[in-house]
Amino acid sequence: MNRYIVAFFLFSFLGWLWESIYCTIQERKWANRGFLYGPICPIYGFGSLMGFFIYDSIKAGNLPNIEWWAILILGFVISMILEYPTSWALEKLFKARWWDYSDLPLNINGRTSVPTSVAFGFGSILVMKVLIPWADSGINSMSEPLLNFLAIILVSIISIDTTLTISSLTDFENYVASIDEEFQNHMTNIVDRVYGYRNSLYNKAIQRIAVFKLSGRKNRIAKQIREKRFDDLIKDYYKSDEVRKMGESIQHGSTTTLEHCENVAWISYLINKKLHLNADEKELIEAAMLHDISHHDWNNADVSRKIQNSDDSDVASDNTEGHFGIPEKEQEAIRSYMWPLNITKIPKSKEALIVSLADKYCALIERIRLNKHFGLRH
Image 1: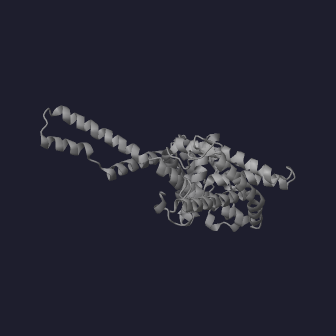
Image 2: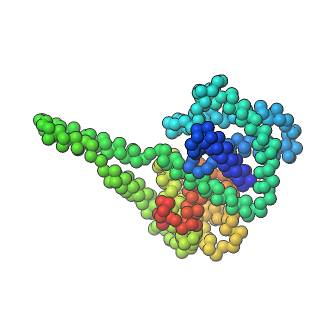
Image 3: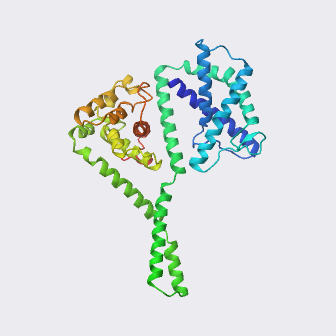
């Protein structure tokens, strides 16, 4: 799994590099291609993973060697399959198009076209015959601890990047602003009904009321609403002696285990809210607050456990079952929070996936000790 993760990022970067250079030359100005903030185009990463699966199957003897013309056809088909649904999904979710082939012949709704897919087919020959063997050789030369560490860092980075990108595209603040605007209009109508006359001075006053904005205040109110709801969700856990014991051990940097769990719960709560994932808030917060209740002190752990401490999730799950009697769904979320370090324990619910992503994000930020700069609670 770690090998595929590194390959995904490598080819996502190469795809971003190719598209950025090509579009910069074509448009004669810098063109930063890609959906995310960082220098990657994930669609190239997914395409390369299909190539890697085929390459591995050929090496293992499960598939015969593929001729160049078969690679061309396969690349053409995969390009058509990847581009159309990806373009459609991005447009439906974010009301924007990242590419448009409407001016090319034989295009399908501008989302994919025969000429571009043929070009990707020829590019697939280069990928399968040169780039994938080169990447495979480089990745296999890495030591297992280095590969594990690199995979964790890359997953953490894309988790942060995806969260920031989608948060900027799905605007929670606009929702609060619309509530404020509705209130302002309602108050204007009340004033209009109370006063039955309109002179020039009065009209100017009413106009000022209607357009008066308090952006800073709206942001503060929205933040206070979120924090009040979150505090209500976590306050009962601090009554537990088992939870308070987590404050006695250090997790990452100078962050205690209890502080880390609250950070993960907070980021999980924000991800669920901002991305409108509709995960169960109680189950989500409970799994996040109790996911590290193994009371393991990372500062005193040996190096091998720091690299891959996959048994902590089992200990935490046993502890929560023994002390709190939480449902199986939340136990499963706790057991799988270490994924993809523990490849066999894949998150099986929205709550589990959110906690796993939030844990990687918080762990990275706590390690570099920029907690307050990146939205953590502690």
